[in-house]
Amino acid sequence: MASYYRRKKPDMVFLNAKPINSGNAQAYLHGVRKYSIGLAERLDSGYQAPLNNKRSSVSTVGSHNNDFIPNIFYRNIAPVNWFLRIIGVLPIVRRGPSRAKFELNSAAFLYSVVFFVLLSCYVGYVANNRIHIVRSLSGPFEEAVIAYLFLVNILPIIIIPILWWEARKIARLFNDWDDFEVLYYQISGHSLPLNLRQKGIYIATLLPIFSVLSVVIIHITMSDLNLNQVVPYCILDNLTAMLGAWWFLICDGISATAHLLAERFQKALKHIGPAAMVADYRVLWLRLSKLTRDTGNALCYTFVFMSLYLFFIITLSIYGLLSQLSEGFGIKDIGLTITALWNIGLLFYICDQAHYASVNVRTNFQKKLLMVELNWMNSDAQTEINMFLRATEMNPSNINCGGFFDVNRTLFKGLLTTMVTYLVVLLQFQISIPTDKGDGDSNSNVTVADMLMDSLSNDMTLLGSTVIAPTTTTTTTTALSRSGRGRKG
Image 1 (spheres, helix red, strand yellow):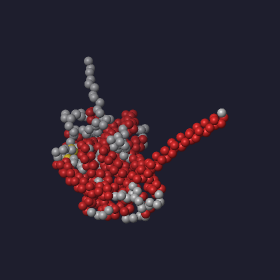
Image 2 (spheres, rainbow, N blue to C red; image 1 turned 90 degrees about the vertical axis):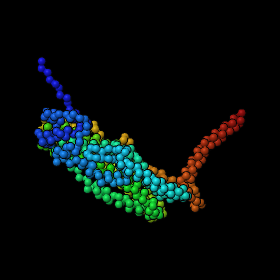
Image 3 (cartoon, helix red, strand yellow; image 1 turned 120 degrees about the vertical axis):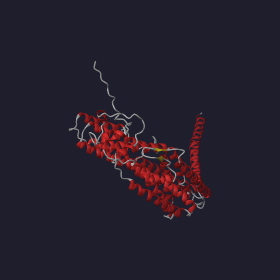
Image 4 (cartoon, one colour; image 1 turned 45 degrees about the vertical axis):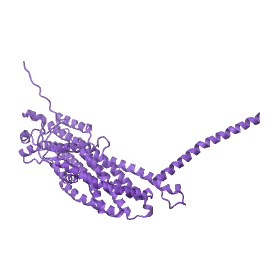
């Protein structure tokens, strides 16, 4: 009796695709086809599954093939990454490709804790002085905006413990990028050609200089320059600026990878048309789409706090700038203008680069697929193309901060719209101050609390008058009706 053994179908569509065993990589890279290693053809060529279930080492692949270049993504963001580690933000230990970890007993985490404690003591001293300045103010709120701005600028110190909480997810993201580079090399035949390191070096060199200059100019124009209090503001301002630059480089790497993958896929279709090659590129795209989503999840709480902080700072600085324009453009307005423009630019680049990455991963890749000519392909290849399109429709590629919101240009527009609403309300309160207090008492100081109490008392007066008026009318009508009845009788 004839019998046969059904071969198990490989998982070549799902997100759990891993790089093949490094010991067999050479056989496939120099085997039947150079530009693709179809998973089905690997089984036909006698592929044996690896005995161990450990993560494939990228260093092992690199030792067998001199053409493979590991750590490409990590090298591109390394300049900004090292700057963040110097200020104690990213205590991630990385002993090699695909070996990034967050360890509580590591020297990097110990350095980060010591740096955070010293910085917290320094910031606490500065915050205490700023609180005394705010308490001593007795003028209107628009004149106290500058004092409140210096107090709010201390809040980014909260980002450091938030990044400790998310360090494991960030380390996992780095490891997934290493696995993606191996998979890209095995399918395309060359290493991932990312060229962002020069941009990262320029950012890590020039951005801290501009940040320190802006802080010094703000302190010169808006308050007395005290070097003892300028230092923590320079560190915290560099923290927010370099986190935005780090986000910019990560999203730029995703955009460049998606563009390269789409161009490589379109060129390969013009010369080679087997269905297995389309399946391999679908696996690559699914892994890249997962990396895009994991970027937002790994930095979820950090950039939720960053967005709220930037929104608050921009609203306060623009309100202080607009409320003092009636007196003319003074030297304090220079610092408010720099603060507003710096933070608006940072928020814009965070939202715009994430939007550009999402569009490149999904929309532009769908355009490449829709432009493929299917007439000369066989039925299997056409089916794989249709499944590829279906995969791009069903797998979201948006950078979402843990389900709170999508980071894109819509977020930037929504924050600006809400900001304008708050500014209109605050300016209306400011305009109503002279009418509520009268013209005779022009020298008295009016605060926002006084303004709100006056508005509340006016509302209660109007409410009382509307309640008393119908009662009086009813009483008069009743009296008239009674007098009418007496006359009639």
